[in-house]
Length: 115
Length: 111
Image (tube, rainbow over all chains, first blue to last red; front, side, top):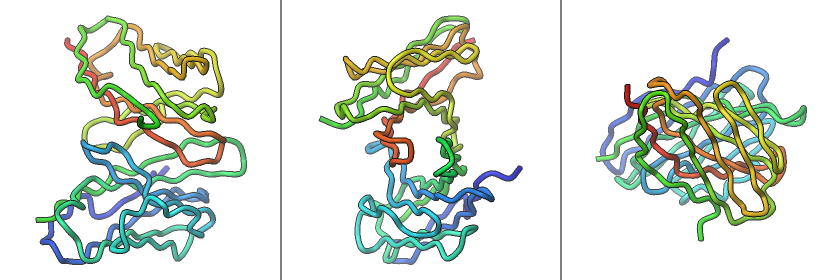
């Protein structure tokens, strides 16, 4: 059974460049979450979707960040322009809501370094 | 005061010892409490989940919630080197609400 799939696993780019992170949730899951993890701030929720609709984007740090979920099997998180302080590990997670509590299943993350 | 506080460690204990990991929180609305385990360069995975106060046991793992003190614990009995990981507490007010995570405690079990 495939878990949450994230790509790329690692990304190194120069500041000012556009960065696109991708996520494929587990089939049948109707909620998707984007998190950012740093040593200083821990795991922070950036945005989450229910049934492809953004529900809460209050964690998105700035307008440079945007997220889309065009269909139930794909989501992107974009940073444009990127800055060194965006360096972190970005996780995508998915779960099924509305049918009893289900745990969030995490991907293995994208390690992003902005030079 | 942060919503969820967790000692970052590292915590080093010998193999076979009992491990105690803890979190405190400030939001009395939290009712769902979770512990996630995160191995290096991997995503967090759910270990234990409890609702409201009380204890829950699963094999070598026991989760405790004391809502009156706003304090939750995870105990690991007969600790193994494979338990070495970062443990994150997490909580939410309602079943489908967003989850607030602690920063995690790094645990090392020494063979």
